[in-house]
Length: 506
Image (cartoon, rainbow, N blue to C red):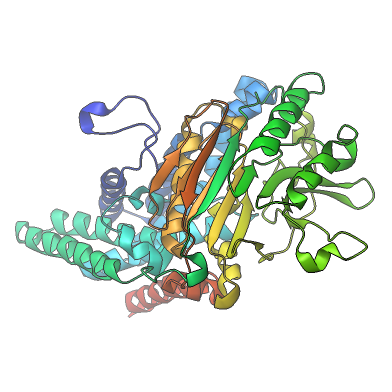
């Protein structure tokens, strides 16, 4: 998804930036090896090894949260990452074994079958055991030739297209020399098809209500992760700094990141929460603030509270209206939800982990200044099919995404860049801008085309102020994923696989 290493400038590789051609090359090499595999067992072995190496290079930074912050012994931390990669690699092993067992004879059909099998492996990684599709191949093309297709088929569709092109290249180049023309023709056709829709998808003009950009202030506290939940240090610093910034910010919308206030409202110093509510009860500013909510009896949630001025009709009411609330739906396994049978593993670490309540899919947006702002917390923006649930009713569809994150658990690593590419892909898919307020980075403003227009340096304390233009209209991807989820892609992968199986039996 993003080049993970600081070296590589001689090849034009920049740490943290997507490298589409490298992803294509790696898949082409794998497809070529599978094409010459002697048995399905060897194919499964090759696919599994490829996936383990790919994923260890993608989320090696889990070592920091497990060892540095969690106190897990280094060998156990490394083993945990390798085992996670190996478990996820089973999907790819199955896909590659299936390909070798039932691959059609003709190169074009073989390439299509390889792409379908690879797509099914990626979809399985999304669907099963809470889902962890971090580092999917389609993200490598957020800046590449295939990016215009994102608004039509989403990141999983890009994964399919990339696998198809890579396999076609491999199979043609491994065939007799006359096939190189077919390989070039296939690549040229793919690029042409990708760029055909670039001028009409997502180009819907903004509604009159959205014609005026909204000014935003995004806060980045840079509270050290090992102090963030410590009462005498990080908690005091967070409450003081975020309190000052929320009171003095200039933007029409102020956003404080995930658990910016690391205490429950009832645990805050006396008058602290009431002062924030009073601050935004009048005037022309609103705020979205990340903090935990709940109590011992009802359970806890990782949440966002929205504060905004009381409307004239509400001002006459005896009781003030309840503030806007968003509860995180897709919880982090082992962090916010502990899988059955793994409490022993959590006890090995010194991290404040536990089971949180899960919010609903498709929660209402936060309405402010004619915009419909759709919050998502941490890696929730990794699951475009869940964000798509908010686009079923076009009249109530979000005009802007708001991501509140804390990637401080993973240090100053490529995890920050990878999460940024994920957010950029969501903007491309839905044709919506996304604003991101984080603890350590990347705090940015992304326009509807997936381009970063404003940013703060990572691991610094500061406030990012800029303007962002909300958008209306529904992209093809938003339309179908909101109604059908990922089932159309499942159907595509299974249909191609079924045809290959039937054809091979004949």
